[in-house]
Amino acid sequence: MQILKVIALLLEYPDEQVWQSGEELYALVAHDAPELLAFVERQLNGNLLDRQAEWGEIFERGRSTSLLLFEHVHAESRDRGQAMVDLMAQYERAGLAIDCRELPDYLPLYLEYLSTREPTEARQGLQDVAPILALIGGRLKQRDAPYSVLFDAMLRIAGSKLRSDSVTKQVSGEARDDTPKALDAVWEEEQVKFIEDSGQSCSSSPLQQHQRRFSQETVPQYLDLSAGGQK
Image (tube, rainbow, N blue to C red; front, side):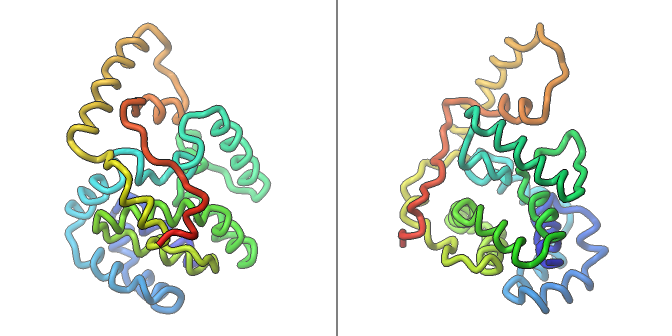
């Protein structure tokens, strides 16, 4: 399903590839996901540096809009490590090799994997994470982030009844983790952990690096599997 690879590209940190592939992207979106045409036009008509800054504000401020899927289910629990191993094995069976610096639950990477599968399998793969997609999309919509339309598009392609509006009740009751106060708490804890780790080896896995970035002072609201019944 080529459209999933397109959505993966649109979700990635913006680079010149999007602008260079503008006509092709527009054609694919017009054919398979016309609801995304306005988003693509907005991206292509914007300044690259502005779009990069916007992406950082949306996806790198706090945990609640993280593009790491398991962040919204397992957080830093032991279950996350096993889920990572299982997903990595799934990629390997499909012949997909990923860089050692990449985390297997990174959504654009997962979409790239699904784009290589048969349509039925790809849709099932999206359905497996549909509650997570709805949750992230709902948080983005609450923040008026344009990227929310990508999540509703993925849910439509999956054939899921969920949409970003399905989690409105849950999202409206969450404490924002992208405020200056919340972010200050994160980085203060990061400084403490840096001092604690200073005597250890500088080498660590990407997952460990990601985990050290966040403190327990700012705890996001995790996935509510009953979200499908919310309005």
